[in-house]
Amino acid sequence: MTSATTPPSTPHAPPTADASPGGRDDLPPLDVLLPAPRRLDPDPREDALAALYADEPPSRGPWTVRANMVTSIDGAAWGPDQRSGSINDDADWRVFRVLRALADVVLVGAGTARAEGYTALGRPRGLTHLRAAPLELALVSRTGHVPERLVAADRPPFVLTAAAGADAARSVLPDDRVVVVGDAQVDLAAGLQVLADLGLRRVLTEGGPTLLGALLRADLVDELCVTTTPGIVGPGPGRIVAGDVPAGPQQGVPVLPRGARLAHLLHSPHARPGAPAGTTIARWLLPIG
Ligand SMILES: NC(=O)c1ccc[n+]([C@@H]2O[C@H](COP(=O)([O-])OP(=O)(O)OC[C@H]3O[C@@H](n4cnc5c(N)ncnc54)[C@H](OP(=O)(O)O)[C@@H]3O)[C@@H](O)[C@H]2O)c1
Image (cartoon, rainbow, N blue to C red; front, side, top):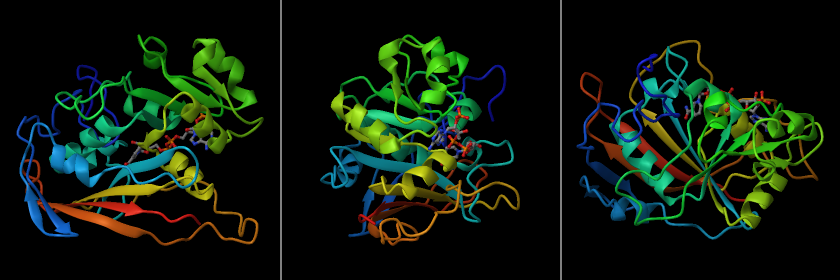
């Protein structure tokens, strides 16, 4: 749990910038259950784990959007403290940092940046051989309200906003970091195109649920990586997808609900001390709807 004296967290990441949720350096082994059983022992370079998340060919545009989310087994997207950090664990963290190491840009909703106290991002320690370029952050915000600690960052985020939020965003960020796409609503596809034009084609979205819901409705998600940690939170928290109910068939083709193909399934026999073991980590590929 984050307090005034601990650094801010990021969704299902631990409160410190590069330490595991359990505060240990030794990350747990991961068993590959599918497609072919084997064990991935802790590895500072994480080459084998990164290979499991190798790029798929882009199919929806010049970009790929990978969503990475965590849930409890009863479907909660956050814990009693309103943050996802309280439902994650070391196994999730092991994959989380590899996905950040492989991305060009992390895309988050402004609500998540505010709730989780996002700061400027860096490449995870020891994994720059996977991708050396700076890891960019892009915020989606209709209102254009950027959290203070991101305004103050040496490397400010991009903000994807609508005309309605342009002035607010431009009042605190350099013009070249404010991407205005859409009038009343943020046109997410247009925003992804702008990022791709800047060379930011591997997009990792870390949520939150409202942004993921909008991306799914617009059929912009190529893959959904879901960690299920073995806890029960109980009634209250929302799911990993939120927002408006889909308006029905678009151009004759319903985008949601839809199927997905399992690329791999990992399992961790270890968990943070005192917590039950059994975390599963799935990579689901989404066909075009
Ligand atoms: N389980 C997980 O993996 C996970 C991951 C991330 C977050 N979370 C949790 O989720 C909770 C936050 O949920 P949330 O749904 O509020 O998060 P969110 O999607 O990050 O934030 C919603 C806000 O982001 C902006 N936004 C999102 N989608 C937009 C779109 N399509 N167009 C324009 N603006 C958009 C809007 O900001 P403006 O108001 O500025 O317009 C909106 O109010 C927190 O408790 C967090 O811990 C869980």
